[in-house]
Image (cartoon, rainbow, N blue to C red; front, side, top):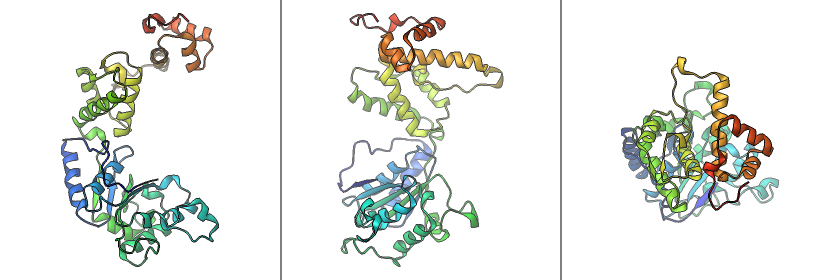
Length: 327
């Protein structure tokens, strides 16, 4: 969980995109920032729901107060109630939770509950009580209003009817203001804008590495389905920058699986051989052609590693710096 009390916005807290789906999200953010009503962010994992929540907070009159983020799915139910609402000192579990509770600490600001589907129904009812004023936060600053509640999930609150994992009264509150955060595959040219943004940011960290994307890679990124969404894109760009030894990233550097027609699907044997070759090339790039280091990274015997290279027709000297000693 994260608690941030600074009104300053981080450089990384930037929503990037000019596509129609993102323009709609930005319009909804402007509305959400002007209200204290609870907001529900609906979207797949990795789409940037927390960044949307931060942007709502930073754009609101609450920006000078705390932004509290909690990932509910990683906290055991027995502790989640104490984390949110606090526990009396004589409760045996109080030593495992934050004193007054996160809701009290977020007073005047915003609390973001990610993976809302993991919150037990009993706690959802208590959250509804906070929204309606039926439950108070005794440890909160009495001069501050209750925090704005922003919840996020990949599950539509009312989808499963009577068997819903969401409290239906709380779901009704969410239904009145739901922001659908689009998957990356629906954002068109935003994909290349985001990739360029991540590449530029990594350039400050690794100034001697790749600094541009080839036209072929840009086209390929638009074809890829991005199941991990923006998070996957950022991770793939970072991985490519770490192993690439050239200024321009190309199609092969991001290891994007190409969509295949049924007749183009390779046999298991061929696919295994392709993976093996890609993997050995990647390890050699990281180790700069040092065979002993590459074998250790691959957790293989040095002789076995040589055999795999020979089988794939790979020459380690093409990866080796001239000043490095031979392995």
